[in-house]
Image (tube, one colour):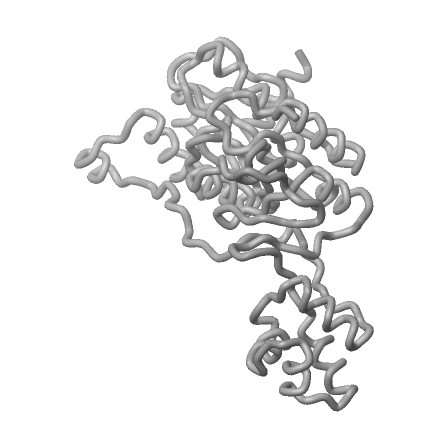
Length: 327
């Protein structure tokens, strides 16, 4: 199987599951390959034949983009090291959940969540601690007695009940056989990943700060957007330069001089913004030959400089879209 085949399989699964899909991100580098939406579910999907190819910087950017968009970031692949990914098993790479196409299919089409996670040392299952404790107490069984039956320590049983430790598949099967109840906790692949430090956003620079440390043209434009009242998160591998957010809107934000690459990126940004239900704008440092590409509005820097707040920026963008539609 090639990566190209893998991507087509993933697109087929998500389409079959009722997701709207963006165009494929074919601009390098790329932190994700496709954006997908179904109702309130937003996915940023990275496709890697070998999931070990995910690096820390890409994973970090995926997580922050997903956070800003109110969605989830996942990696779909085929193998890890020298073995294929197992069905119904999830793997973690830099706090990003990774799985194979069959597991993706089972989750979104068959409504069967995975139960097993891979970790150093083997495969593990999270236990429904309250169910285990209730089953044990219903049979008036002590922690020590149960621990002896399955060959673990009393403290380990206590950890299972507190949901502070995952168990091996064999242990879970033994527990379920003893009590006659299902104890494995389903894995929600849409759940946000672990805690992380906030990524550095663009903070508005004062005139004195700008003089002391002059900003590059692109950074200067992002600083201007920040001064309008947006939280601006710079990106390094997305098709856009930053994602800007205030209380009422999220804007995919491109920054560049006008060239043919701008048009290509704007097309892709339009596709992503349509799927994620966000706004899309490209700030042109200099003159622009066109006013918009699909639903991505192009604004010259001199036009941006005349805008005073976030609402005025949104109004300007809407006016430009209406002008395009009338034309």
